[in-house]
Image (cartoon, rainbow, N blue to C red):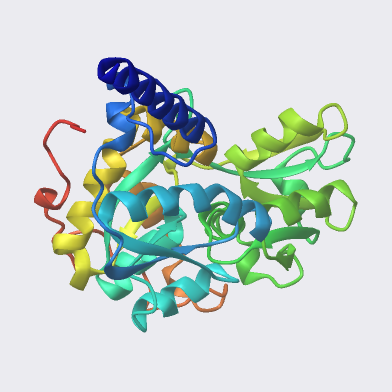
Length: 338
């Protein structure tokens, strides 16, 4: 009789626990296959990391791309990663100077300016799907435009984006080659806009005769808007690195080392790959200042007119070695590991 009562009591107890588990009131022990999902992560209580981003597209879309990346890095680094969106490319230079951000993802020209003026360091660049890790500036016109060559831009209106390779330095270098910067009546009139998307929209709407933009952004919009968006290229710049991670010199070690290490091994884990896909990238890879040689060439060609064309800083931008001594040891060389 006693054994029977014990059996009944045990069965009732097990049934009750099963019901509670079904209601979510009893924590379940994960199966061995879920071990990676419950691996201990460092608590998010370290110093705040402020990550700057600049708007090459609409600000909402830009923040959407970076939000998942910031949350991932917060978990991996054990510190809160806060996104700071600046209005213009010039503003991020001031944020670095005033130590309002520790790191930022920057386009090629502003990255070089940060290195030259503030002794910041370029650590990694973004590699997009298909192994693309560089971009070019392009000068575009509508497909049905009467403008057939760069020479036809003389005295026309061109939409541009300040302090960018594609939207500022490259077109000014092209104007300088033709002697237009010495002749106010010949130089195209800039229509300064905030993003590459706005430039493409202005050309499409006929608000400008031409536009100077980043080719990767143009390709992306053409895929979405074809056949509505039909544009021709009048000129194409040499290749420069895709958006790069730039870190303030005073926080490169250990913060820069840790941040670069986590970014470089993202593609080796399922969680990291999922975040990369949402970000629109395949992986992060090391980047060197030698890859920016086209920017140094254009900057030197425009040195005498640097301030006149709206670029800040002491002209010309100096090549690596004259003002910096980047150490490859700051880039993690170990193989990715979870």
